[in-house]
Image (cartoon, rainbow, N blue to C red; front, side):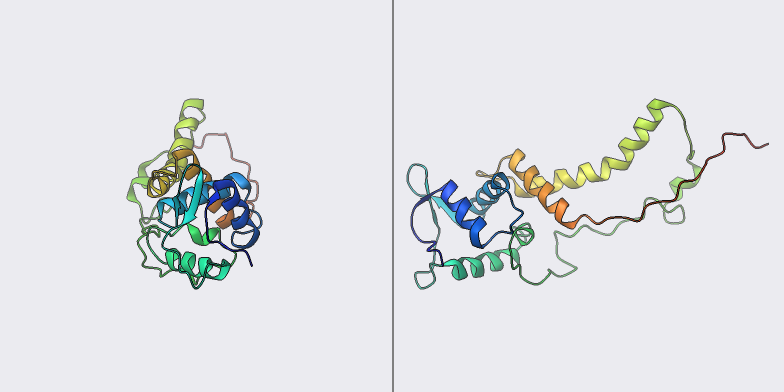
Length: 191
C-alpha cells in the first residue's frame, strides 16, 4: 500500500488518489479538482511551496486504509456530500432526510399538482416562445448547478473546478429514460 504521509506535490497526490482511492473513470483534471475540494474540507493542506500534506493524520494509519476511513467519515457530513461519488468504496447512502438532498416540491409537469398549468397554452410555434419554453425547462437544472457549485466553492476550489465536480457527479447518477413514441400533432384547427 502507498504511504500517504509526508510532503508531496499536488500532481503526486492526484496520481496516488487515482491509483487506490478514486474511481477509475475519474480523469486527472477532475481528480485535481477533488484534491482542491479535499483541501477545503481540511484533509489536505499546503506545506511549503508547492508541497501538500495530510492534515492531522493519524501516525498509526499513514496508509491508504487510514485515508479511506477518514474520507468515508467526511462523506457522512454535510460538507463532504460530494465525495461519495468519487470513492471506490463509498459508505452507505445518506439518510433521505439529509440536508443536501433536494427538497420535494410540487410536480411541475402535473396539472393536478400545479394549477398554473391548467391555464397555459400547450403549443406555440414561434421560435422566441420555443426558446422561452426551453429556458423554463432547464431553469431548475441551472438553479441546481448554481446551488451545488456554491456549496463546493472554497479557497482551493474555483467555480470551474466546482462545475467539473458537479458534471462528474451528474454523469454518475444520470439514468436513461425510456424513449417516447413519436406522435403526429395535428396542425388542423378544431372548431
